Length: 208
Image 1 (cartoon, rainbow, N blue to C red):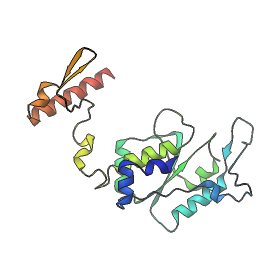
Image 2: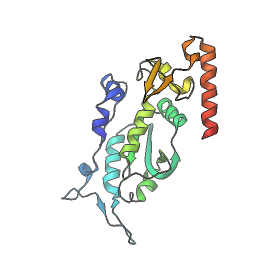
Image 3: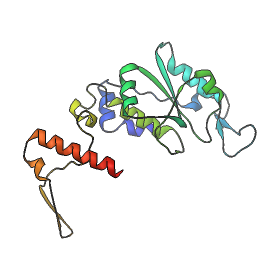
Image 4: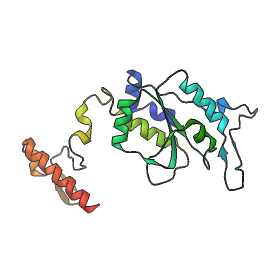
């Protein structure tokens, strides 16, 4: 699930340029079970399967190696809400980050007790696995590294957060209706344009 995303667009260019490095550790490679099994039924009963502690701990040990300042993140629905500020902090404070992706009904609680990771969630919803969440964190954090976007002005939050953007043509006709680019955006008056964007953002925030 992870590799194909890393081979596209900005992440691909960032990896190729050496701006970021992403290594994937398959838990099955760290299983001592002859069938490479990494999960089992939960003690005390319950539905689903639980990822065992040992494969995760071994994979974490290999990933960390001799690195001293390494942040370990455990993705879980009850973790702290991930946001842009946190992504920016990650990009500035840490060179090495290990992300543990939960799956099935979760992971053995002893992993958290032993590794003491930072627990994160990308939103108030549950996914079938942590891979998509890990990719979201990699993508969001990488944007703040110099050179990844090519132009730092591409960081929307450094200007104004708005979805009111337009491009050519100036006049668009669709299903017998005309849609025109707002006049202020055609003036070239940067101060007025920025004020317009701010008002649109304020309007959107009130509506939400």
